[in-house]
Amino acid sequence: MTDIIICGIGGKMGANILKALEDYDDVRCVGGIDAYADPSKFSVPVFKKPSDIDIDADVVVDFSRPEALQGLLDFATSRKVALLLATTGYSPEQVEAVKEASKRTAIFRSANMSLGINLLIGLARRAAAFLGDKFDVEIVETHHNKKVDSPSGTALAIADGILAEKPGYYETFGRHGNATKRDAKEIGIHAVRGGTVVGKHEVNFFGDDEVITLTHEAHSKAVFAHGAIKGAAFLKGKAPGMYDMNDLIAAMID
Image (cartoon, rainbow, N blue to C red; front, side, top):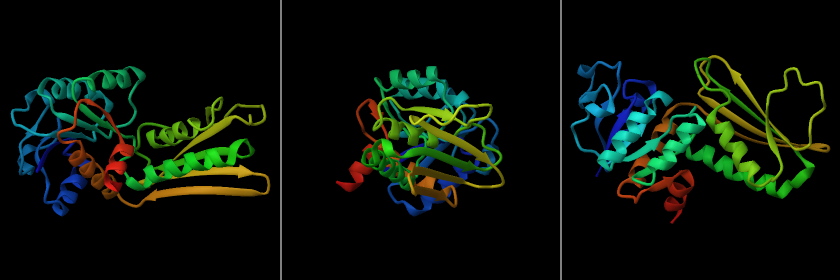
């Protein structure tokens, strides 16, 4: 059995994880972290901050905000509890802090917990390698009007995957005020916000007389919840280090 604590248990993703856990016999929630949630509404203890936690767990699953990171890292490293980070919008300094903490405990980090979106990232990498320099690459991400970070962490992860296959290429974020023509080595990233869209990502390869488009669209947050639960089960008992969706997918295939 994998015992998890959900950071952000009072939010939408917290509710989705609790609902998704009904489908699992080997993973359970034993507690939550949420500064604003009413503890009386939950069947498990809910703590205001990580330092208040007085129960044992295998993994902390975080779907909160970047501001919560340091407290989670302190808790995970001091208690030797694994940490699954599904929050986006970290600063470069925070990313370095995560890497440093991974020397002392197992940390799983992914900008998107959907298995499908991680398949898309792999396909985009293969397409970039196969198509070479003859195709322009443009990424368009669409999310609900309450999403804070822009562009999405997933769009950046897609771009990182493509950049790994295209040395010398670079990211361009929109083109407002750019009076020059498109550079052949640009990877354009564009953010759209509106309504209640859960998440849609398009990777476009524009060639001469043809266009190839890879698309992933999440219709509910449940896909992220199931990915997080599978990730937590995978992370239990792992040695200190950094893990990601590629490690999870490889383990599922094996």
